Image (cartoon, rainbow, N blue to C red; front, side):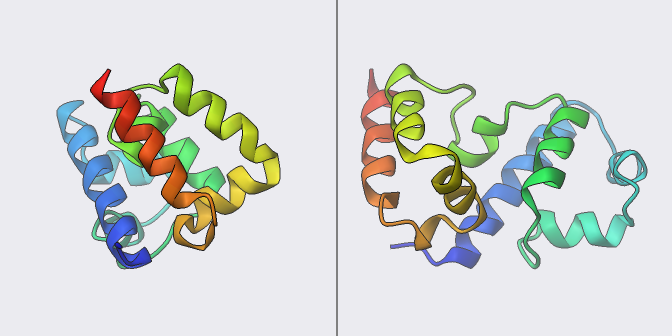
Length: 118
């Protein structure tokens, strides 16, 4: 099972790749976020966690689907959307903040993998 720090690093790498695909520099993205380049770089490298509000703002700035960053898939499949809806709003926030602490993490990943194969 992946450690929480590995997941944050994966998410940061996915975001960096998506940002670069859009030709959005680290500097431009940080300025739009009103962050330092260093703060954004730390998140992209997995050295720091990002809060949910900033995460969604970054995805909006980079014009990238948050699901692409979180799950490696560009959009939610119907199965995954249903699974997330089952978690409820509070659980969604907990899952996004620290997925390994969520008891449904394993089931969510199995459903995601199954949905991606279809």
